[in-house]
Image (tube, rainbow, N blue to C red; front, side, top):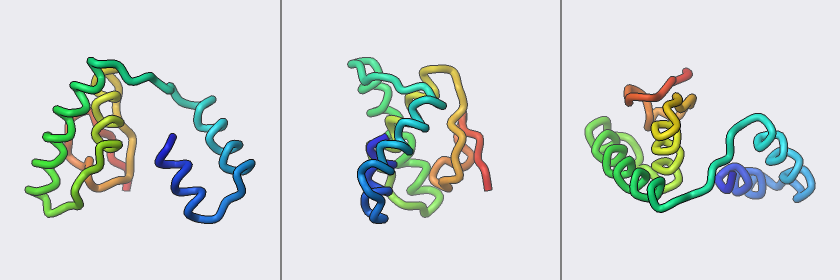
Length: 96
């Protein structure tokens, strides 16, 4: 949510529009809270993403990337993304 908010603010959206868009996302997805377990999983996911990115010559992952990836894995779901950083990883549905 914070990454989306940052993107919209950076692109010049007014705060009321940013709130509307975030509310839409919140209504359509599952927002989960960080716990000590999810923090540990995110740390491990970060290292996995960093190794993957290094081998593939991709950008360095952010901690937010790792949190999102770890959360999808912990919930037994699939991360649906068009971000090449995640292409080919388990628990990822990559959209081109």
